[in-house]
Amino acid sequence: MSVKKFVVGCFDDEAVLFPAVKKVRKAGYKLHDIYTPFPMHGLDHAMGLRDTSLHTAGFIYAITGTTTALGGISWVFTKDWPLNIGGKPHFALPAWIPITFELTVLFSAVGMVLTFCYLCQLAPFLKKHHFHPRATDDQFVMVIECTEKTNEDEVKSFLAQTGAKEINVQNAETGWWLGRYDKDTMPFQVRKEKTAFE
Image (cartoon, rainbow, N blue to C red; front, side, top):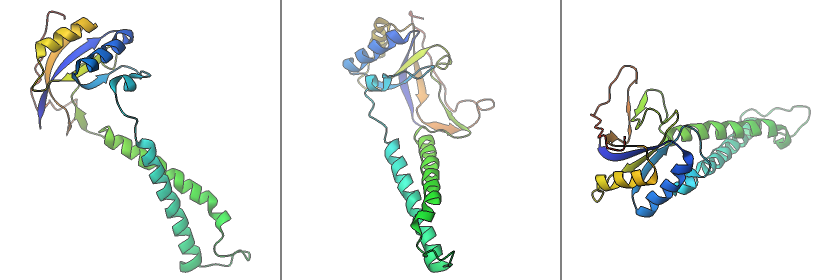
């Protein structure tokens, strides 16, 4: 697994976080991610993230469900096992609308959930590095990835000027690995450097 170096800054107020995000992007630092205890409206635009394509995937799954339903029903009632039901034609499209609708919704819902879990790397026994234990409680955690041109001290000083209350450097795996939080330890050593701002 590839371990990368990150500068982690913690903010205690969302009103301070938003201007800090804009300043970090304007300064040209590589913003890895921001972890907040609750959803924040407009943070994705402030981070420069593009709109999700999940709705496009949902449309493709829905069309697949519609095609599967119409193709399967029409094959059964016209080719495989045609029945004369009350004198109706074998290709009775209005009678097939309910099951076609249900299969469209089923394919779209299940497909979007699985796609979301895949994109967000969510599954049982998948572990990811947590940059700060209070990111799900009351802290807004900004993570900046260090590149070859990044000066750690300069980034820490910059975050302190933007209002970060706690700043440290961590070596962490950006991907995921299999394991359990209650039994397994991390497969790498996390290094934290405390600064004068803590």
